[in-house]
Length: 557
Image 1 (cartoon, rainbow, N blue to C red):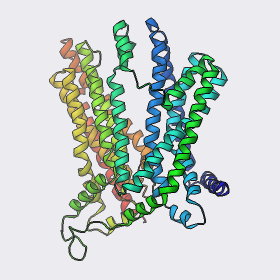
Image 2: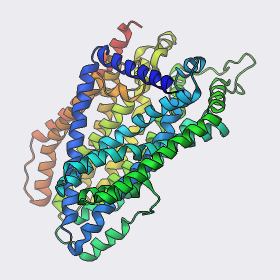
Image 3: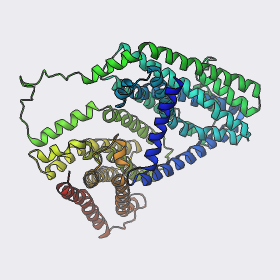
Image 4: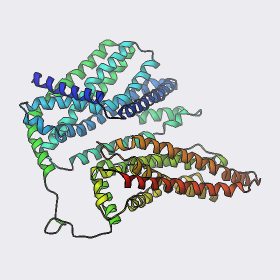
């Protein structure tokens, strides 16, 4: 088994080395961009948590002595649960859905060796993102208390068995589910469960309103109430409790207690991996066969005619809309984004409600700037959905060429498909936030009309650039918006939003002077700004669509 395992892991090393040395053109630029963004995220994460730890340490009644370990306990408990969920989803792909499994199972290799090598990959794939998020937290904690180098070595060593336990539990759950509950919808269901958990966690943490403790007038009762809200399940048998105690003891220099808790983690990791291998030896192959049968089972033809073909005839654009809707709701990577979008909308409006705005002028200014913030939200949504829409056709894009429709109809059909839902979301944010800020009718109209212009322009810009820079070959949807065209879209969209705000600044400034200072400053500059806004929006919405249409017509598939 050890010889087979070393060969399988050596194969993964060879594949990784080939990807690095013989990567496709432009891959290094993409990796460099991702590395820069990751470094910026790590720095920001460190600064954020370092500030929180510093503030908690200065709270009265030594509340920080309770809050800081509790904060670490919250982090570790969250990472453990997310690691288990991630282990379920990643192991489902690596153990059952990977395309090379049929070849591996046909070779003279034991199923235990295959399962063990895949488990090592599962630990890496399910934990690297959480490591990127959590390591700055431990660094901020150690730096604040001036911990020694041994503390950082302990943290790194303890995280290995910690994530191994979480991934092993998730993998065992996958083995049981695929053996006794085979279903072609299992991956979607597990993805939805994990996503609902993440959305609920984000909403819960935001509704704790931690920003209220960064003001000057904070009572002791508020602090103690917040401490009580943060009480988490502190059971001694949880790995999150072991690693929390071990990290705090290592920071304080209590190496006897730290090593005891580390030994608990190691023993639990050994038993978890052994339990996974024992369970895999019993039920893995049966579950893999059942999963393969579910994937190859024929689809339901109850709505087809006797020859298995659809008998309904519809307009080509209507057919494209039906196809996009079915693909959207069949793909969990698409429709699951609605839950994140709902949570972000709720948190966005919650932030508007809790803004400390006691001045009427400041309320109106924030309402106008809110148009720009909504524009940033729309940019992210358009990059994820609108820009990616042409590339989502994938390798079957040739069917669009062979269908009785033109590229112009194809793009404008996509435009009519995406514009209404984006407009609804944007106007909901603009209308509700303006109502909560209690602005006058003019500022309300500026927010609503400005949001309409931004939605119109970004929809056309996203579809046009998506047609000019398509990526029909992609492993996942996220790769589409991270390419050259996606970066250009974000740059152009943010530039457009900035110019739009600059053009709207003069009319709003004139209105503020007339309303709050009773001073008239209006002239020809106000209608000129209005006209320039309309012309700029129409140009940004139409010109990329025109260029994208030309690009698709000339494309050689």
